[in-house]
Image (tube, rainbow, N blue to C red):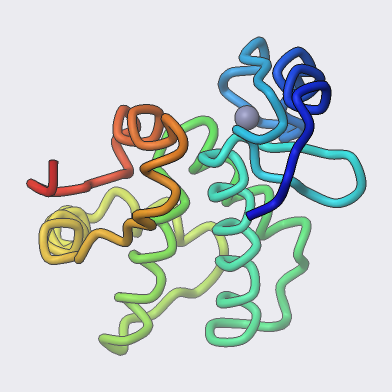
Length: 164
Ligand SMILES: [Zn+2]
């Protein structure tokens, strides 16, 4: 275990940081750095924001590698941002829709088609099924030392099942 001086603990407790995610839904929620996810340099993110950001990058990668590598990233990102931040469909769900369509030999003709995927009733039902069957990934150490769980379980994306 790392030894931390009382002075350092106090300093840590007093210092709060802001989430640097440009789409952060809680921009006024400042927290001590140890409650945030550390990014490059001196940047910090809410866990949910870091997750959304990473998932969007994953969608872009997946699309370029498995659907069509001729689209421009800017165009693709534009559609994804529109779906995630304006239509409020989580990046997790969008990723699932694309993956499921691809895996089942469905066609995705252009980034714009993603708007149809998220509106597809069958995909919505499949995603619900997928969430139900998903085994929760829980880091026991994190739960014991932080209130991360209370924070994340409020989000519609987390499903910790009947564990608690
Ligand atoms: Zn944030």
